[in-house]
Image 1: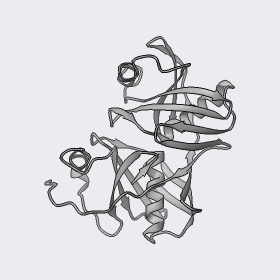
Image 2: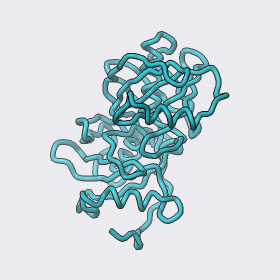
Image 3: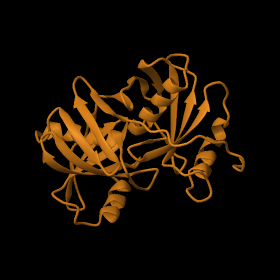
Length: 256
């Protein structure tokens, strides 16, 4: 499945755990390889929950565990509704950072609105000749506003991603503001170690920082390389977009 081109492999463990916890990281690295595996930006494990409607576990492509993923949550939520594990409407999802409320409905396409929680901000930094705004929305992000992309996007992104100011690493988001309700975002994601076509939590991070700085409104359309998202700031941030199912299959040659 993918959310705006940010693609994931979903493994259904709702009835039975298929990949032992201690082997999940290795499995993810193998299956996400785009030449020797299926290929993906990460793996989502769909599990039963004792405290919510379903449980969301997410691993980045490099096998590292991540607490949350906005685009991945949309794919997960569509899946559990389509599969019949949960009814359409409000879905409560258990994640490592708490229970998230998601709204799922079909209107020509599957639409999913994810409550992303409240951002936490840190003081800005001067890095690579840019003003960098750290913010955490489930996972850590660095937000940088630019007038254009006439710079070494990959080189700068990697240096910020591994900068000593971010001991746990950071997702790096560059944003060009068109007006108060429209912004274009490019994201270099830790764990993927590359640019992804879209980052849901990164889009939320950009709007949160932009609103705090007074350059973006509370409802903003975010354009990414993979498509459009809508971010709204109320008591907490919400993210709305689609989720696309590409194919289903069976694995035979992944040895653990």
